[in-house]
Image (cartoon, rainbow, N blue to C red):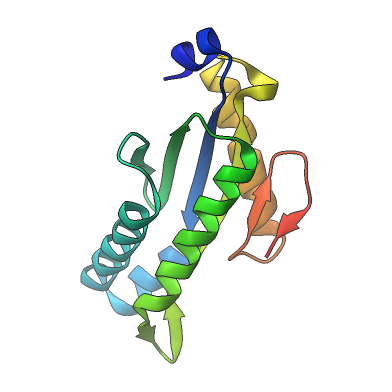
Length: 146
């Protein structure tokens, strides 16, 4: 996808997502509930990305998405759609709606077709979103978006 985009002069956006406080969900409510939360996130992703985009579990409660022919602004829009779908699912645990997720967004306009650098940039933005209080979107090199 990145090579094709680079050849065509288009962009690819990578989104790193992390389910907020997932370890405590597993610890407090059990792994079956944790599995339900992961499924809810998967449904939200499926409803928010195009069929040509890629979504995968990156490890534990982290997910990665690659959006073809997309800018960072498109990535923000996808992350915000996922947040909206998650909030509409209303899984309630101890009176709190879960899951919420934090997102880091980076596009290939800065990193070209260097996948490692693009993922690292999105991951840095993700940690910025988590540091800003979670349940928000941060674009690489920008302030968090709520």
